[in-house]
Length: 234
Length: 234
Image (cartoon, rainbow over all chains, first blue to last red):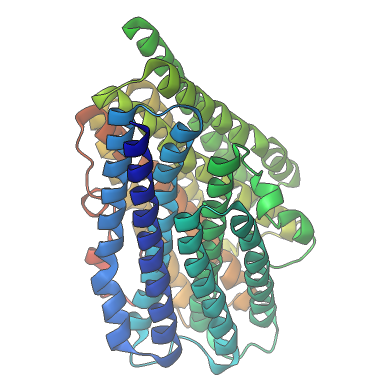
């Protein structure tokens, strides 16, 4: 029973890792598509999106089977339920990459981003891809220390996001309201992608240690930024 | 055993319903605060937000205890796990109301919204409150037909959201980029609130019928709107 449980649990971790890998790949391609107005790459992200949700459904089924057939308790139970909760976060990471790809397609052949802010998105994209890879690693290794470090990458994302709003809110913004709306939403998509990665990390810490870090301690940056006049929160 | 299970499951449904009630109340207050630049009401939403997360933690604990002690199978297992998944959606509904309250506080004593769009937000707020109440009802009664009808209210929200973007993207927008950024994010918060309500409905349908409606059929409106030049998707 125990051996079967461990094997199935490893398999679930690998599948979740694979799912995070797909979400990370989607984000990598969506960012390249966005930066270079690459319609083909945007279409690839859009066409392949269903794979992420399908893998999520497979993960959920596997977790249900584990619960029903193995009847895990205590830490094992927490791990399986945690797996189900993680599916929702990774699924959302994929959906956010999809939104970026669709924005690229919608404006094609125009570029969505004014040159002035494309550097921000290149960097937010780099961090998002890094977070995707870290999420995969954490799901496969269940290393709580690596999970806790996601937080640092998320802070870098928050800093970029904050600076981006400073640029947007500047009186010298010359690209009109439509571009500002695009940049606002795209910036939010990157920031939310990072938040979901951090949430996965928080859940992995919980399922390994039994202690769920409070989301405030772990990644909420609201308190630091409540005096800013821009939109900092997740 | 069965009696205990049913009792505890009813209790979980009531607690989830209560949580949805708090999220709906937060949205109602946040909308009033937004429309009238009412700082006191915004502060109330912010101060009381923790109650929603705390109730979420209680729901999760109760569901874990149910899994560990009652060892439910088949439909019962699905119902308990569904309850845990629903916590994440309702928690997010509360967080979105919180974001709206914080935006109100951030711009106080100014109004966040230009007069031209406040009617849209009054209506989006009305629908959001209605969706919050429906979510509560569905969690308490587990009525799959009512759950499926959430979809109609979500369509009304999507329509409003789409029109709002038309106003924003209009060359006659006179309120500057900063207001456009605010309106963009606030509009998205309402739309996401509705999406999470619909997601709860979808999960309730699943836990009652055993069939998870595809999110596309149930609430994704992307295909209808892929030719629009605005940001329609959730």
